[in-house]
Image (tube, rainbow, N blue to C red; front, side):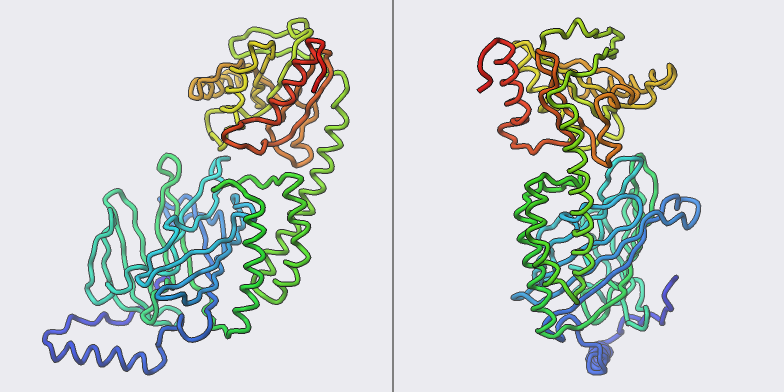
Amino acid sequence: MEPHARPAPTLPPSPGASLNHLASLLLTCALGFANPLDEGAGTSIRYSGALRSGVRNGEGEVIKRFQLYGLMRREGEGRQMRWFLTERGAGGWSWPERFGTVQFDAEGVPTPAEPLRLMYDYNGAPTPLALPFPIVDYFGRLKPGGQWTTGKESWEVQQQVALNERPCWKVAATTGIGRRRTVWVLESAPLIASSEGNLFVGQGDEHKLTMQLEQLETLDATAVEKQLAAWARLEKLQQELARSPGEFRPELSEAQLSQVATALPELKKLAEDTPLSSLVTAISADLRGQSDRSTEVTRLQSKFVGKAAPEFELTLLDRKTVKPEDLKDQVVVLHFWEYQAEPLVEPYGQIGFLDFLNDRRKKLGVKIFGVAVDERFGNAEGAAAAGKSVQRLKSFMNLGYPLAGDDGKLLKRFGDPRELNAQLPLWIVIGADGKIAHYHSGLYKIDSDEGLKELDEELIRQIRLARGKPAD
Protein backbone atom coordinates (compact mmCIF):
# COMPACT_ATOMS: atom_id res chain seq x y z
CA MET A 1 0.00 0.00 0.00
CA GLU A 2 1.31 3.49 -0.90
CA PRO A 3 2.33 5.35 2.26
CA HIS A 4 0.28 8.43 3.20
CA ALA A 5 2.18 11.38 1.76
CA ARG A 6 2.74 14.65 3.48
CA PRO A 7 3.43 17.67 1.28
CA ALA A 8 7.03 17.72 0.08
CA PRO A 9 8.77 20.86 1.31
CA THR A 10 9.94 23.25 -1.37
CA LEU A 11 13.56 24.32 -1.67
CA PRO A 12 14.33 27.28 0.61
CA PRO A 13 14.48 30.50 -1.38
CA SER A 14 16.96 32.28 0.84
CA PRO A 15 19.74 31.71 3.42
CA GLY A 16 17.29 32.74 6.14
CA ALA A 17 14.86 30.09 4.97
CA SER A 18 17.72 27.56 5.01
CA LEU A 19 18.40 28.40 8.65
CA ASN A 20 14.73 27.97 9.43
CA HIS A 21 14.78 24.58 7.70
CA LEU A 22 17.83 23.51 9.75
CA ALA A 23 16.14 24.68 12.93
CA SER A 24 13.10 22.62 11.99
CA LEU A 25 15.24 19.50 11.56
CA LEU A 26 16.91 20.07 14.92
CA LEU A 27 13.50 20.48 16.54
CA THR A 28 12.39 17.20 14.93
CA CYS A 29 15.33 15.42 16.55
CA ALA A 30 14.54 17.02 19.89
CA LEU A 31 10.97 15.75 19.67
CA GLY A 32 12.14 12.14 19.59
CA PHE A 33 13.48 11.39 16.13
CA ALA A 34 17.11 10.93 17.17
CA ASN A 35 18.97 8.14 15.41
CA PRO A 36 17.38 4.95 16.84
CA LEU A 37 20.45 2.90 15.89
CA ASP A 38 22.55 4.73 18.49
CA GLU A 39 20.22 4.66 21.49
CA GLY A 40 21.40 1.46 23.20
CA ALA A 41 24.11 -1.20 23.18
CA GLY A 42 22.58 -2.57 20.00
CA THR A 43 19.46 -2.63 17.87
CA SER A 44 17.45 -5.56 16.58
CA ILE A 45 15.80 -5.12 13.19
CA ARG A 46 13.43 -7.47 11.44
CA TYR A 47 12.12 -7.26 7.90
CA SER A 48 9.44 -9.25 6.14
CA GLY A 49 9.29 -9.53 2.40
CA ALA A 50 7.81 -11.27 -0.62
CA LEU A 51 8.75 -12.24 -4.15
CA ARG A 52 6.04 -12.10 -6.81
CA SER A 53 6.06 -13.59 -10.28
CA GLY A 54 3.93 -12.68 -13.28
CA VAL A 55 3.90 -8.98 -12.44
CA ARG A 56 4.03 -7.65 -16.01
CA ASN A 57 0.24 -7.51 -16.25
CA GLY A 58 -0.63 -6.79 -12.62
CA GLU A 59 0.43 -7.36 -9.04
CA GLY A 60 1.42 -10.95 -9.73
CA GLU A 61 1.40 -13.97 -7.44
CA VAL A 62 3.39 -14.32 -4.22
CA ILE A 63 5.68 -17.31 -4.73
CA LYS A 64 8.13 -16.76 -1.89
CA ARG A 65 8.09 -15.06 1.50
CA PHE A 66 11.05 -14.32 3.74
CA GLN A 67 12.19 -12.66 6.94
CA LEU A 68 15.53 -10.98 7.55
CA TYR A 69 16.71 -10.48 11.13
CA GLY A 70 19.68 -8.30 12.05
CA LEU A 71 21.57 -7.39 15.20
CA MET A 72 23.04 -3.93 14.60
CA ARG A 73 25.90 -2.51 16.71
CA ARG A 74 28.22 0.43 16.57
CA GLU A 75 31.81 -0.58 15.73
CA GLY A 76 34.35 2.22 15.51
CA GLU A 77 33.09 4.85 13.09
CA GLY A 78 30.86 2.32 11.35
CA ARG A 79 28.39 -0.43 12.18
CA GLN A 80 28.29 -4.20 12.27
CA MET A 81 25.26 -6.29 11.38
CA ARG A 82 24.93 -9.97 12.17
CA TRP A 83 22.00 -11.38 10.20
CA PHE A 84 20.06 -14.51 9.42
CA LEU A 85 17.44 -15.25 6.80
CA THR A 86 14.28 -17.36 6.91
CA GLU A 87 12.66 -18.37 3.59
CA ARG A 88 9.37 -20.05 2.73
CA GLY A 89 8.41 -21.30 -0.72
CA ALA A 90 10.28 -21.66 -4.06
CA GLY A 91 13.57 -22.88 -2.64
CA GLY A 92 15.95 -21.52 -0.03
CA TRP A 93 19.50 -21.55 1.25
CA SER A 94 20.73 -24.41 3.38
CA TRP A 95 21.11 -23.34 7.00
CA PRO A 96 24.93 -22.90 6.94
CA GLU A 97 24.47 -20.20 4.28
CA ARG A 98 21.51 -18.47 5.96
CA PHE A 99 23.49 -16.27 8.34
CA GLY A 100 26.55 -14.04 8.33
CA THR A 101 28.12 -10.71 9.24
CA VAL A 102 28.38 -7.43 7.33
CA GLN A 103 30.52 -4.43 8.28
CA PHE A 104 29.45 -0.90 7.29
CA ASP A 105 31.87 2.00 7.28
CA ALA A 106 30.98 5.52 8.46
CA GLU A 107 29.28 6.24 5.11
CA GLY A 108 27.26 3.01 5.16
CA VAL A 109 29.36 1.20 2.54
CA PRO A 110 29.23 -2.57 3.25
CA THR A 111 32.04 -5.11 3.49
CA PRO A 112 31.76 -7.64 1.96
CA ALA A 113 30.11 -5.73 -0.88
CA GLU A 114 28.20 -8.78 -2.14
CA PRO A 115 24.48 -8.30 -1.44
CA LEU A 116 22.39 -10.38 0.89
CA ARG A 117 20.61 -12.90 -1.31
CA LEU A 118 17.49 -15.02 -1.44
CA MET A 119 17.73 -18.46 -3.03
CA TYR A 120 14.96 -18.84 -5.60
CA ASP A 121 14.19 -22.18 -7.23
CA TYR A 122 13.45 -20.85 -10.72
CA ASN A 123 12.31 -23.57 -13.15
CA GLY A 124 14.31 -26.13 -11.19
CA ALA A 125 17.52 -24.06 -11.10
CA PRO A 126 18.76 -22.50 -7.82
CA THR A 127 18.96 -18.76 -8.58
CA PRO A 128 20.31 -16.22 -6.05
CA LEU A 129 18.44 -12.89 -5.95
CA ALA A 130 19.93 -9.79 -4.33
CA LEU A 131 18.28 -8.13 -1.35
CA PRO A 132 19.00 -4.51 -0.47
CA PHE A 133 21.21 -3.92 2.55
CA PRO A 134 19.17 -2.44 5.44
CA ILE A 135 21.78 0.34 5.86
CA VAL A 136 21.99 2.79 2.95
CA ASP A 137 25.17 4.52 1.81
CA TYR A 138 23.40 7.59 0.39
CA PHE A 139 21.86 8.95 3.59
CA GLY A 140 23.87 12.17 3.30
CA ARG A 141 22.30 12.87 -0.11
CA LEU A 142 18.74 12.78 1.16
CA LYS A 143 17.20 16.24 0.91
CA PRO A 144 14.24 17.75 -0.94
CA GLY A 145 14.88 17.48 -4.68
CA GLY A 146 18.11 15.49 -4.23
CA GLN A 147 19.40 13.67 -7.33
CA TRP A 148 22.49 11.57 -8.05
CA THR A 149 23.77 8.70 -10.18
CA THR A 150 25.39 5.48 -8.98
CA GLY A 151 26.64 3.20 -11.71
CA LYS A 152 23.75 2.75 -14.14
CA GLU A 153 21.12 3.86 -11.63
CA SER A 154 19.66 7.36 -11.50
CA TRP A 155 18.32 8.33 -8.05
CA GLU A 156 15.83 11.00 -7.08
CA VAL A 157 14.36 12.05 -3.73
CA GLN A 158 10.65 12.32 -4.49
CA GLN A 159 9.04 13.44 -1.23
CA GLN A 160 8.82 13.08 2.54
CA VAL A 161 6.17 10.66 3.75
CA ALA A 162 4.86 9.01 6.89
CA LEU A 163 5.26 5.24 6.73
CA ASN A 164 3.85 3.33 9.71
CA GLU A 165 4.03 6.62 11.64
CA ARG A 166 7.76 6.91 10.87
CA PRO A 167 8.93 10.00 8.95
CA CYS A 168 10.70 8.79 5.80
CA TRP A 169 12.30 9.93 2.59
CA LYS A 170 10.78 8.35 -0.53
CA VAL A 171 13.54 7.71 -3.07
CA ALA A 172 13.22 6.30 -6.60
CA ALA A 173 15.92 4.60 -8.68
CA THR A 174 15.69 3.76 -12.38
CA THR A 175 17.95 2.40 -15.10
CA GLY A 176 17.82 2.56 -18.86
CA ILE A 177 16.97 -1.13 -19.13
CA GLY A 178 13.65 -1.09 -17.32
CA ARG A 179 14.71 -1.73 -13.75
CA ARG A 180 12.81 0.31 -11.17
CA ARG A 181 13.18 0.58 -7.40
CA THR A 182 11.47 2.66 -4.77
CA VAL A 183 12.99 2.92 -1.31
CA TRP A 184 11.65 4.57 1.84
CA VAL A 185 14.48 5.57 4.21
CA LEU A 186 13.98 6.73 7.80
CA GLU A 187 14.59 10.45 8.24
CA SER A 188 16.23 9.73 11.60
CA ALA A 189 18.64 6.98 10.54
CA PRO A 190 20.29 5.52 7.41
CA LEU A 191 17.92 2.55 7.58
CA ILE A 192 15.47 1.27 4.98
CA ALA A 193 11.87 1.31 6.18
CA SER A 194 10.49 -0.27 3.00
CA SER A 195 11.55 -1.09 -0.54
CA GLU A 196 10.01 -2.48 -3.68
CA GLY A 197 11.45 -3.07 -7.10
CA ASN A 198 11.23 -5.12 -10.23
CA LEU A 199 13.85 -7.64 -11.31
CA PHE A 200 14.22 -9.97 -14.24
CA VAL A 201 15.01 -13.68 -13.95
CA GLY A 202 15.95 -16.14 -16.66
CA GLN A 203 15.03 -14.88 -20.13
CA GLY A 204 13.49 -11.60 -18.96
CA ASP A 205 10.79 -13.04 -16.69
CA GLU A 206 9.74 -10.02 -14.60
CA HIS A 207 9.35 -10.37 -10.84
CA LYS A 208 8.71 -7.95 -7.98
CA LEU A 209 10.57 -7.95 -4.67
CA THR A 210 9.20 -6.11 -1.62
CA MET A 211 10.64 -5.71 1.88
CA GLN A 212 9.26 -3.87 4.95
CA LEU A 213 10.72 -3.04 8.34
CA GLU A 214 8.57 -4.81 10.92
CA GLN A 215 10.62 -4.37 14.09
CA LEU A 216 13.11 -1.80 15.33
CA GLU A 217 14.04 -2.41 18.96
CA THR A 218 16.74 -0.96 21.16
CA LEU A 219 18.67 -3.57 23.17
CA ASP A 220 20.55 -3.18 26.41
CA ALA A 221 24.04 -4.57 26.99
CA THR A 222 22.78 -7.79 28.62
CA ALA A 223 20.57 -8.69 25.65
CA VAL A 224 23.33 -7.89 23.17
CA GLU A 225 25.93 -9.98 24.99
CA LYS A 226 23.54 -12.93 25.17
CA GLN A 227 22.98 -12.80 21.41
CA LEU A 228 26.68 -12.35 20.66
CA ALA A 229 27.54 -15.52 22.57
CA ALA A 230 25.10 -17.50 20.40
CA TRP A 231 26.37 -15.84 17.23
CA ALA A 232 29.97 -16.68 18.13
CA ARG A 233 29.17 -20.40 18.47
CA LEU A 234 27.20 -20.39 15.23
CA GLU A 235 30.06 -18.72 13.38
CA LYS A 236 32.55 -21.21 14.82
CA LEU A 237 30.41 -24.09 13.57
CA GLN A 238 30.08 -22.44 10.18
CA GLN A 239 33.87 -22.22 9.93
CA GLU A 240 34.31 -25.84 11.06
CA LEU A 241 32.00 -27.08 8.31
CA ALA A 242 34.24 -25.37 5.70
CA ARG A 243 31.52 -25.22 3.07
CA SER A 244 32.40 -23.83 -0.35
CA PRO A 245 31.42 -20.16 -0.91
CA GLY A 246 27.91 -19.96 -2.37
CA GLU A 247 27.15 -23.63 -1.67
CA PHE A 248 23.43 -24.33 -1.84
CA ARG A 249 23.17 -28.11 -1.53
CA PRO A 250 21.98 -29.15 1.93
CA GLU A 251 23.90 -32.42 2.19
CA LEU A 252 26.54 -32.66 4.90
CA SER A 253 29.15 -35.38 5.15
CA GLU A 254 29.29 -37.83 8.04
CA ALA A 255 32.11 -35.77 9.58
CA GLN A 256 30.11 -32.55 9.21
CA LEU A 257 27.01 -34.11 10.74
CA SER A 258 29.17 -35.15 13.69
CA GLN A 259 30.41 -31.57 14.09
CA VAL A 260 26.84 -30.28 14.12
CA ALA A 261 25.75 -32.91 16.66
CA THR A 262 28.64 -31.91 18.94
CA ALA A 263 27.81 -28.20 18.75
CA LEU A 264 24.02 -28.46 19.02
CA PRO A 265 23.57 -28.81 22.84
CA GLU A 266 25.63 -25.69 23.49
CA LEU A 267 23.90 -23.84 20.65
CA LYS A 268 20.45 -24.61 22.05
CA LYS A 269 21.46 -23.31 25.48
CA LEU A 270 23.05 -20.12 24.14
CA ALA A 271 20.21 -19.31 21.73
CA GLU A 272 17.43 -19.85 24.26
CA ASP A 273 15.15 -16.80 24.55
CA THR A 274 16.89 -15.03 21.65
CA PRO A 275 15.78 -14.55 18.03
CA LEU A 276 18.41 -17.13 17.06
CA SER A 277 16.39 -19.93 18.67
CA SER A 278 14.37 -20.38 15.47
CA LEU A 279 17.56 -20.86 13.43
CA VAL A 280 18.92 -23.37 15.94
CA THR A 281 15.59 -25.26 15.81
CA ALA A 282 15.97 -25.48 12.03
CA ILE A 283 19.53 -26.78 12.44
CA SER A 284 18.31 -29.45 14.86
CA ALA A 285 15.57 -30.59 12.46
CA ASP A 286 18.03 -30.71 9.57
CA LEU A 287 20.46 -32.79 11.62
CA ARG A 288 17.75 -35.34 12.43
CA GLY A 289 16.64 -35.54 8.81
CA GLN A 290 20.14 -35.85 7.37
CA SER A 291 21.23 -38.37 9.99
CA ASP A 292 18.20 -40.57 9.25
CA ARG A 293 18.81 -40.18 5.51
CA SER A 294 22.50 -40.99 5.92
CA THR A 295 21.62 -44.14 7.81
CA GLU A 296 19.24 -45.25 5.04
CA VAL A 297 21.82 -44.54 2.32
CA THR A 298 24.40 -46.53 4.29
CA ARG A 299 21.97 -49.45 4.38
CA LEU A 300 21.45 -49.10 0.63
CA GLN A 301 25.20 -49.07 0.13
CA SER A 302 25.67 -52.24 2.21
CA LYS A 303 22.97 -53.92 0.13
CA PHE A 304 25.05 -53.55 -3.04
CA VAL A 305 28.75 -53.34 -2.17
CA GLY A 306 30.45 -56.72 -2.49
CA LYS A 307 27.50 -58.17 -4.43
CA ALA A 308 27.37 -59.00 -8.13
CA ALA A 309 26.19 -56.01 -10.17
CA PRO A 310 22.82 -56.39 -11.88
CA GLU A 311 23.24 -57.30 -15.54
CA PHE A 312 22.50 -54.27 -17.70
CA GLU A 313 22.75 -52.70 -21.14
CA LEU A 314 23.40 -49.04 -21.96
CA THR A 315 21.99 -47.16 -24.95
CA LEU A 316 24.38 -44.33 -25.75
CA LEU A 317 23.51 -40.97 -27.28
CA ASP A 318 24.89 -42.12 -30.63
CA ARG A 319 22.39 -45.04 -30.44
CA LYS A 320 25.15 -47.63 -29.93
CA THR A 321 24.41 -50.30 -27.36
CA VAL A 322 26.85 -51.42 -24.67
CA LYS A 323 26.13 -55.04 -23.78
CA PRO A 324 27.25 -57.01 -20.72
CA GLU A 325 29.88 -58.91 -22.73
CA ASP A 326 31.46 -55.59 -23.74
CA LEU A 327 32.24 -54.91 -20.07
CA LYS A 328 33.45 -58.34 -19.06
CA ASP A 329 36.69 -58.29 -17.05
CA GLN A 330 36.66 -54.45 -17.12
CA VAL A 331 36.66 -51.90 -14.32
CA VAL A 332 33.49 -49.85 -14.92
CA VAL A 333 32.25 -46.55 -13.48
CA LEU A 334 28.58 -45.59 -13.75
CA HIS A 335 27.79 -41.96 -12.97
CA PHE A 336 24.02 -41.51 -12.66
CA TRP A 337 23.04 -37.85 -12.82
CA GLU A 338 20.43 -35.54 -14.30
CA TYR A 339 22.56 -34.57 -17.31
CA GLN A 340 20.73 -31.77 -19.11
CA ALA A 341 21.60 -28.41 -20.63
CA GLU A 342 19.01 -26.49 -18.58
CA PRO A 343 18.95 -26.00 -15.72
CA LEU A 344 22.70 -26.39 -15.57
CA VAL A 345 23.02 -26.77 -11.82
CA GLU A 346 26.33 -26.09 -10.12
CA PRO A 347 28.59 -27.92 -9.67
CA TYR A 348 27.40 -29.88 -12.74
CA GLY A 349 27.47 -33.20 -10.91
CA GLN A 350 31.29 -32.84 -10.74
CA ILE A 351 31.47 -34.00 -14.36
CA GLY A 352 34.51 -31.84 -15.12
CA PHE A 353 36.53 -33.76 -12.53
CA LEU A 354 35.11 -37.03 -13.84
CA ASP A 355 36.19 -36.16 -17.38
CA PHE A 356 39.71 -35.44 -16.11
CA LEU A 357 39.72 -38.80 -14.34
CA ASN A 358 38.55 -40.51 -17.54
CA ASP A 359 41.53 -39.04 -19.43
CA ARG A 360 43.92 -40.40 -16.79
CA ARG A 361 42.50 -43.89 -16.28
CA LYS A 362 40.98 -45.02 -19.59
CA LYS A 363 44.41 -46.10 -20.85
CA LEU A 364 44.57 -48.44 -17.85
CA GLY A 365 41.35 -50.15 -18.92
CA VAL A 366 38.78 -48.19 -16.90
CA LYS A 367 35.49 -47.56 -18.71
CA ILE A 368 33.48 -44.58 -17.48
CA PHE A 369 29.86 -43.99 -18.50
CA GLY A 370 27.66 -41.06 -17.64
CA VAL A 371 24.01 -42.09 -17.30
CA ALA A 372 21.53 -39.25 -17.85
CA VAL A 373 18.49 -39.91 -15.66
CA ASP A 374 15.39 -38.37 -17.24
CA GLU A 375 11.93 -39.92 -17.34
CA ARG A 376 11.52 -38.57 -20.90
CA PHE A 377 13.79 -41.36 -22.12
CA GLY A 378 10.81 -43.66 -21.51
CA ASN A 379 9.11 -42.72 -24.81
CA ALA A 380 10.35 -41.96 -28.31
CA GLU A 381 9.17 -38.36 -28.50
CA GLY A 382 10.50 -37.41 -25.09
CA ALA A 383 13.75 -39.31 -25.63
CA ALA A 384 14.58 -37.15 -28.65
CA ALA A 385 14.19 -33.92 -26.63
CA ALA A 386 16.07 -35.31 -23.64
CA GLY A 387 18.85 -36.60 -25.87
CA LYS A 388 19.33 -33.18 -27.49
CA SER A 389 19.57 -31.53 -24.09
CA VAL A 390 22.18 -34.05 -22.91
CA GLN A 391 24.12 -33.67 -26.16
CA ARG A 392 24.25 -29.88 -25.70
CA LEU A 393 25.71 -30.38 -22.22
CA LYS A 394 28.21 -32.92 -23.54
CA SER A 395 29.35 -30.46 -26.22
CA PHE A 396 29.41 -27.51 -23.82
CA MET A 397 31.59 -29.38 -21.33
CA ASN A 398 33.56 -31.17 -24.08
CA LEU A 399 33.14 -34.48 -22.27
CA GLY A 400 35.30 -37.34 -23.48
CA TYR A 401 33.46 -40.23 -21.83
CA PRO A 402 30.28 -41.70 -23.37
CA LEU A 403 26.79 -40.78 -22.14
CA ALA A 404 23.72 -43.00 -22.01
CA GLY A 405 20.07 -42.27 -21.29
CA ASP A 406 17.91 -43.85 -18.58
CA ASP A 407 14.26 -43.22 -17.79
CA GLY A 408 14.94 -44.25 -14.18
CA LYS A 409 14.50 -48.01 -14.52
CA LEU A 410 18.23 -48.78 -14.59
CA LEU A 411 18.89 -46.45 -11.66
CA LYS A 412 16.20 -48.22 -9.68
CA ARG A 413 17.96 -51.56 -10.19
CA PHE A 414 21.04 -50.08 -8.56
CA GLY A 415 19.03 -48.33 -5.82
CA ASP A 416 17.64 -44.85 -6.45
CA PRO A 417 18.84 -42.61 -3.56
CA ARG A 418 16.09 -40.10 -4.37
CA GLU A 419 13.57 -42.51 -2.90
CA LEU A 420 15.34 -41.89 0.44
CA ASN A 421 15.26 -38.10 -0.07
CA ALA A 422 18.97 -38.25 -0.89
CA GLN A 423 20.45 -36.71 -4.00
CA LEU A 424 22.02 -37.67 -7.29
CA PRO A 425 24.67 -38.10 -8.54
CA LEU A 426 25.15 -41.77 -7.76
CA TRP A 427 28.63 -43.16 -8.37
CA ILE A 428 29.12 -46.91 -8.79
CA VAL A 429 32.39 -48.76 -9.41
CA ILE A 430 32.12 -52.32 -10.70
CA GLY A 431 35.31 -54.38 -10.43
CA ALA A 432 36.66 -56.68 -13.09
CA ASP A 433 35.10 -59.56 -11.12
CA GLY A 434 31.64 -58.09 -11.80
CA LYS A 435 31.02 -57.08 -8.19
CA ILE A 436 30.13 -53.62 -6.95
CA ALA A 437 33.21 -52.27 -5.18
CA HIS A 438 32.17 -48.67 -4.52
CA TYR A 439 28.79 -46.97 -4.02
CA HIS A 440 28.50 -43.24 -3.29
CA SER A 441 25.40 -41.04 -3.27
CA GLY A 442 25.78 -37.27 -3.66
CA LEU A 443 28.76 -35.07 -4.38
CA TYR A 444 32.27 -35.88 -3.23
CA LYS A 445 34.16 -33.49 -1.00
CA ILE A 446 36.53 -31.88 -3.46
CA ASP A 447 39.99 -30.41 -3.21
CA SER A 448 40.61 -28.55 -6.47
CA ASP A 449 44.18 -29.88 -6.58
CA GLU A 450 43.18 -33.53 -6.04
CA GLY A 451 39.81 -33.74 -7.82
CA LEU A 452 37.81 -36.94 -7.24
CA LYS A 453 40.45 -38.39 -4.92
CA GLU A 454 38.16 -40.87 -3.16
CA LEU A 455 36.89 -42.28 -6.47
CA ASP A 456 40.37 -42.38 -8.02
CA GLU A 457 41.80 -44.28 -5.05
CA GLU A 458 39.12 -46.94 -5.53
CA LEU A 459 39.87 -47.16 -9.26
CA ILE A 460 43.56 -47.68 -8.55
CA ARG A 461 42.68 -50.53 -6.17
CA GLN A 462 40.44 -52.15 -8.76
CA ILE A 463 43.04 -51.79 -11.52
CA ARG A 464 45.61 -53.56 -9.33
CA LEU A 465 43.16 -56.36 -8.49
CA ALA A 466 42.29 -56.79 -12.17
CA ARG A 467 46.00 -57.30 -12.87
CA GLY A 468 46.34 -59.84 -10.10
CA LYS A 469 48.23 -57.53 -7.79
CA PRO A 470 47.53 -56.69 -4.12
CA ALA A 471 44.96 -53.95 -3.76
CA ASP A 472 47.22 -51.82 -1.50
